Length: 449
Length: 176
Image (cartoon, rainbow over all chains, first blue to last red; front, side):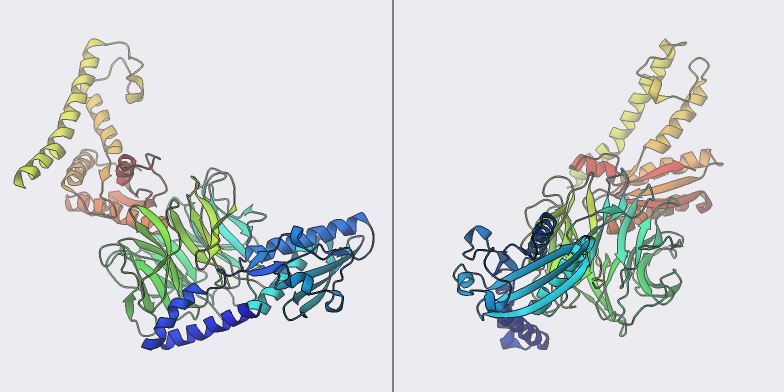
């Protein structure tokens, strides 16, 4: 537990050192990669949650809540969940609070963190008390009581898990985020949306044709995408929940939308900004548009293709793909100064940039030997880190809102599917299986619980 | 070096020419021997042509039209440049458009699956636009030609090998 906090603090210091960029400290950056929090996972014990009154329904709800908590926290890849078979405490007699727990029984089996839960239920109303305990310090660190309907069980569990992650990392995580992706389940390419962990996928578009490049607005209330209902690639801006939308249909291409991040609160669509590639002049350039498609200004100017913009979190720079040097490479443009720097030098085909939410790195797809893999690089001139290898074609990286994970598509099992991994490339696993192929995932913002 | 070039040129220019000649010969041959019936194997090749009273001129016209629609302009990987072979195909397109002044065409730009979808949308457009610019240079009115990019979304051959990729990197002509 302590080690985790120390590690994170250490990383924080290293990032600070690293942005100052003086020579001797750069040596330390190596360790940044070696000590990342996903290598040494925190041993966590989650014994059965206790039904606080007798009755089959309460016991069943307690079991569901315990399993959901374990699954949700395991998804983050920060923890190693200890097998309940190793537990020394008898869940029937042990208590839920600091005073009634024998911490030695937990430290002896290697647990550094312990989560206890108590559940009571009357009819549809559920009440839960959930605690996070530090077994090494012998102290309770989080104690929360939640009330809700049985249907809110996952919401409650995610709220508590969000507290746990906030305690450990200082970030709220992504438990209220979604992942949009393209699926051919219906025979056409359509946008589907699932919860962050792949649960409850549902179809979002019904264009019955080619649909590509979903992009979430900063608050997650709008999705921009490319589709062909008019038999050419146009942009569509569709509300996440309401039947509202706009079309951007300039002559030629209208593709690769990316919303500019905003710090201010709710804005109307006219005030939201979008970068996208248009080719109405005969040249493929990136433009800044309003959410309704009015052109504000052109952002790039070069012969050939400029596509796939991604914004720095402060909205001051864009990274994009250009073939200005003869093959597709990633460039970064500072919009204030107009300065353009080439970002990728390794390989002859680097596309699909995705700027990390912390701003320090860009993930992208790099092709070698006819196959794409996911790479991550920073701004220190060090060579990129390859996160996937020898596992089919890996494309379309997109960061979780807290920057701890990356979602991508892979053909490692044959057909293209959606996978997740940590930002360091560990813990790669499939997110969901649907008929057809799934590609082009985009992680939504965390909209708050 | 020069010899190698000649061999390649011969292959590129003469072989397709020979192939067209051979296919012409077999088809006209078929016409001569069977005046009233169509063999089942030939039927799909000319579904529009009435079997009995097709004149030679109509047949040639139909074949030219089919060639216009089925002969695609090829490209190298990540390139929209027109090879000598691509230019020859486009010259035939220009000639056909010249013979059929009432026709407008859509040039579709397509890519193989190896690149990434977004960049390929841009590449597909550059392919279709390079084909269009070449035709306009040859004298085809630009008003008769429009372009659309399908990126890697509409492959002719779904397989993942060199042969399929080469087939899928193309500009394809469709009559409006």
